[in-house]
Image (cartoon, rainbow, N blue to C red; front, side, top):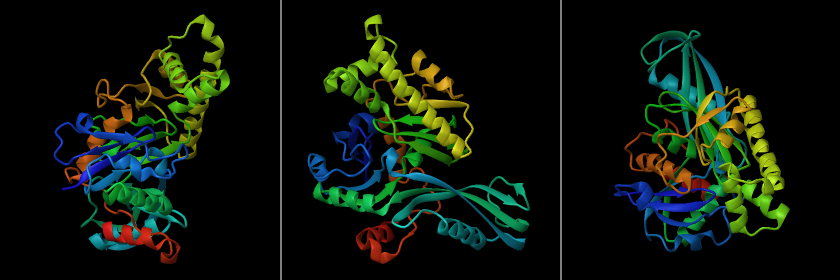
Length: 351
């Protein structure tokens, strides 16, 4: 059976396949990733205290994947066949990514026959033209190779990877509102369809930047700056903290503005969204409301889950053990074999 290796800016967590409560039964270790989502040197040592010789599927941190929306069309002139769908998906994915990258997962998010959007499968339906919109999540081959190396050093066998967007989708119930995930150094806004992910955008700013700004500006310790950032977010700072509030507020405004701009560039409309990683306090709600995003705490977040993003491990374990099906296409190769042979071999073998 396959365990789940949950990766984030804040922590690493290993969940056994037979865990009844994935969140509280997770075995924790320090994060394997740097502030810029690169695997740290010696990251494998962080895994040595976890269960050894486990086969694991890794849920990648927020900054490890980017989203691409791809559109293709094909002339049919008869009933649509399964092969037509596969061919259209393959054409879409041939346009994805860049040298040195691979598709972690991809799936159609909209299908139109003769200009009309249809629900369900188009197979067997007559059509002159088939149009398909595909959402693909891309990751660097070098990062995947470094992650595999770290896993081996820690005594784990990496058998697959998934995007955080997949885990978020599998963690949600019937409420398919967009979700705003705020990790230590990264924030991701995800929009969903009824069954999967429509699109996402990633911003290289997270909750940790508030504490870091306070630490640098006022020469504070890590502990003091983190507590002060928490007090600011919960609106518990006094009049004597006015200068510190100004610094933290500037960074929070930078985060909200960056998310607004990224969403606009991706064609995503802002409205109601769940938030995970920041408290649902009046100060936080007001900051996001300024850019037109009305956030609320999600029902999927369990009380006292720390860090909050660990909540997504529930969806990740469902995907890892097959309780929830994954996307139609996973980890299709996008680069020449000579550029990263070990990573390519791993991708081809495991996906």
